[in-house]
Image (cartoon, rainbow, N blue to C red; front, side):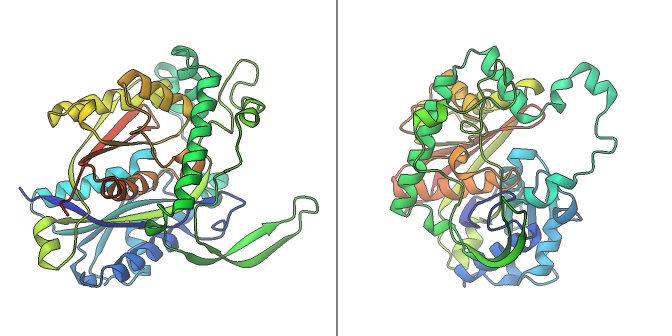
Length: 397
């Protein structure tokens, strides 16, 4: 069985949905831009060596529909002979595609695949096709599968007594850690600037105009956030008795990420320097109405399979869909805060559903090198009631 390595991973900056720099930029254009940047950064990789593209997308319709993986190939510098496909595991789509690429390579069918994910919430969410969306049988027996994600977060808060204070405290730390990491430049290597056009809307007059713009960094975080400011926000999903607010939830944002997955043999043959081994991946189902606790089930399954413990993992990237689920998973599993989301997370940066798994992987492979650590786990909850987790190991210097 072939060893699988992650050679590189790049992404756009994350822009606020509706109001951000990427609000007029199609998802397939974002993916193609990232693919081209990946090729440019790795000149030893011939474009025709890339055999397949596997893209994740949480809402693969409209401007991110058709088959965005294949569309991105046609838009990019890749030859027409490179195939492409699209995968949806909601918030874990970007990690799922990396795992699928790794599995194909381990089995010997491929040597070089570009995986990743994309989400264009601005252009897709307002026009989603909801015709026939709800299956009456499912809705009668497991209605939680159709709950808005914020509603499932409220279920977790109430069911497991996660306080508003602990959610806000965690969210503040996410903002502060993100700000410090940005200031130190620890996100710079993974972000590819993208020139585009954006729609500006005057809030007072409603006047609209299109302007030239460039997304050069993550635009969503609020470095001046305070605990008092978070505490002043009203609950969104249960105004009377809730605790989940805009401040302790991930932001809606647009962006794309791609990750170069290869056999170790092929990467070394081409003179490429891997950053990490991809060691394994697992998923598990849980009650749909408490989907946020999925990592509590996925992580033990992953660690047991590879004969590791919580203490063996040096760094954790646990997607911050909502602070409530991160706090619960952290405390239930005993993950130390000095190893968890050390450079902040989606509460500050934003969460374009389909791309986040690839973004987390791209950041993890760099942080393992920066901290000279061996093992890292990327994990997240998944809409519909699932958890996913992937295991990475730093490549020797």
